[in-house]
Length: 121
Image: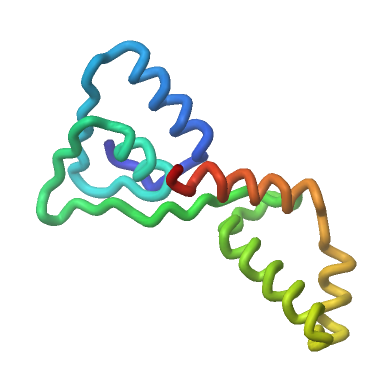
C-alpha cells in the first residue's frame, strides 16, 4: 500500500470487501500510507513497514462546491471558533459577513460525517 490519501468512505468499502473475501489481511507499506490510506492499513491484521515507512494523520479532505479540497476537521474547528466568538459577542463584522455569505448547512453536515468516519469507535 502506497498512497497519499483519498476518500474515507472508499477506504471503508475496500476494507469491507477485503474482509469479505479473506480471513486475514496484511498490508505492506514501503513508503507512506496517508489519511484514508492509514485507515485502510489499520483495518488489516498485520502491517509491515520499513524504518522509513510512514502512516499519516487521519485528516479527511472534502471537496468544496468550487472544486477546492479542504480539511474537514479544520473547517469544523474554525466554524466552532466562529460560533464560540458569536456566543461571547466577540465576532467581528468581517467574520459575521463571511459566515452569512459562506454558510452551507449541507456542507457542514457532510464535513461532520467525514469527522465521524475518521474517528475511532
